[in-house]
Each structure stands twice: as C-alpha cells, then as structure tokens.
Image (cartoon, rainbow, N blue to C red; front, top):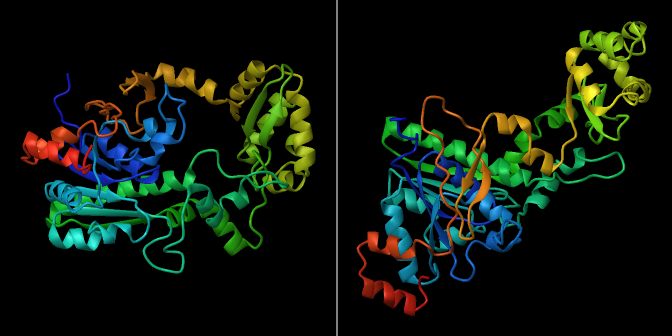
Length: 398
C-alpha cells in the first residue's frame, strides 16, 4: 500500500479552457493529483464536447483531455458569474486559460491582472501565436498552426504535404504549459511568488521542428518530404512482406548495414560495396538501397522478417493501425490500461506515461458532465441553496 501522496495533491487549478491545448495540459495536472476546476459555458460547455460521439456517445477529444476534473457551468459575461470564478481563483494555486486573444483581459482573467491581485498565483496564458506581434489576434487552430510552423511542409510524400494525424500543435503547447506550471510551482516553493506563464502553439511547434529547421537554416536546402522514409538516413522505410504486411526498419550506422547485408540480404559483399558502405552513399543511392532491401524482405512473412531483423540487431517495427495499438502486447504486458468513469459508463484509457515507481498510481478521475459540480462548488464558496437557485433561475450557472 502506497503512503506517499501524488506529487500535486493539495494544488488547486482553475481553468477557463476549451478544445485541446489547455484541457490536455490541465489533465496532466489532474493525473498527478491536482484538483482541477473546469469553467465551461452554459450553452454546451467546452466546444470539444460536440466534436463527435465516438466514445460511447461522448466526444473522443473531450474524454481524452478532461478526466479527473470538476465542471462548473457559468456565464462569464454576467458579473455574478465572473465573481464566482474570481472567488475560486483567489483560493487557487494555478489558473490556466486559452481563450481567444483579448478575451481574458476583457474578463479580468489575464495573467498580469490576476498575478497583481494574487502574488502566489501561477497564471498560464496559452495562445496560438503569443501576446504580441502581427499574428497575436490571428485565429489559431491546430492544422493552421501546423502549416505556419512548417510541420506540414516536411510531412507527407514528395507530391503531397499532409498534416500530422494527431493535433501536434495543441499537444506541443499543452506539454510546455504543463512543464511550465511545474517549473513555476518549483520556483514558488523557493521564492513564495507565482507569476505569469506564457505558451504559444506556434513557438511550441517551432521548437519541435528543431531538426528540419536547423538542417535548412544551416545546411542549405530543407530536408525533402519522404513519406515514412527519413530524409538523411537510408535504409529507413516501410517494406512489403510476403504475406501482405509491412515492416519498418532503420539502419542507423554502417556497422548495422554490414550485419544487414550478411544476415538479412545474404550478400556480405554489399556491406563494403561503395554504393552502400556509408550512410551518405546509401542515401545518395536511395532507390537502389530500397530495392535491395525490399527484394529480400518480400521473400519473408512479416513475423519471420521481424524475427530475423531483431536477431541481427536491426531496429524494426510493424506498421500498426489504431486497433493494433489498442491491443498492443507491450501495453498489455506492462498493465497500462485502466477504466475511466464517464457520464455514459466506463471507458478504457491509458495510464499517463509518467511513471513514478514506488509511489501511488496516477489519479485517473471521472470525465465530468457539463455543470456536474456547479452546486458543490457554489456551496464551497458559502452560497446558500436559495442563492444558487437564484443564479440558476437567472441563467448565471447551470
């Protein structure tokens, strides 16, 4: 039995959030034990609740990003609604918002205002492009930021650029906001003061573009789009097998290539052939390299190909789809699946990837219904049943 608390137990977070970037950031905090109060609109709440109905009638994005939170449905345009949120913030450690640029300031929820009133508060602003500059007020959705940050330019085939299949800009901003909160909490523990934390989607994803960005800035032409293949490493691709499957492999150095030639290609001379002996040569002769590798693997079934590659010490993988990931033997063997309660019943969800051996397991709380915790939160502020009823009657809360 674990006696240690979760790392963020005792920390209270208030979040005026929507979509993915802020909700995914605050979900990380909730998983680590923080109390997260999610402030939502009266008319449908976080608009991610309406993206789809794939998760047992609920939106898959919302289920993914919002477990373990308390939902307060309130009208922030009404002064009484704003007062409720400000009173909650007064007792909070962290405030997070990703409203459209300028909206938080109009509501008195911008970081400078809140941090001036509450010196120990950590106030996080997540935006598309940052608080200043010519793009500050530009609408920022994940796909658009992927394009602005150049990710789409390096993803896809030579003929067709494509966006990432996951909301990469949102996730990048979320994880920098999460780590920013942890850093600010650590700073507060030594200085006693909180302060603002600013994260933009563009700057977060531009950081993730480090390799192609440095390659293009300092090496001339940016790396070409090569599909699954790698722009500067060969062989590094997916290859068809005899049973209709595909195996991905990556040869990272010339020693591995020599083992590949000897044990997989069954032609040791290819290990020293000047067309293939170095990675530069193999990349220069990429089509020929791929043809040699594809020819050998096309004679093997998928499982046999994987077995031989692993025996030769060549990094490889199967080309899985999402159903394969849901049934992945490694995730099962490491007991990574749990059930999370939702308004429509339990759903499978992965444990968060941060594991603290010897400590308690992550707190994977329930996904809240819209306004599920409104009454309890108002009561915690000292409001009577009559006062709450009046607020409901006036459509200030739900």
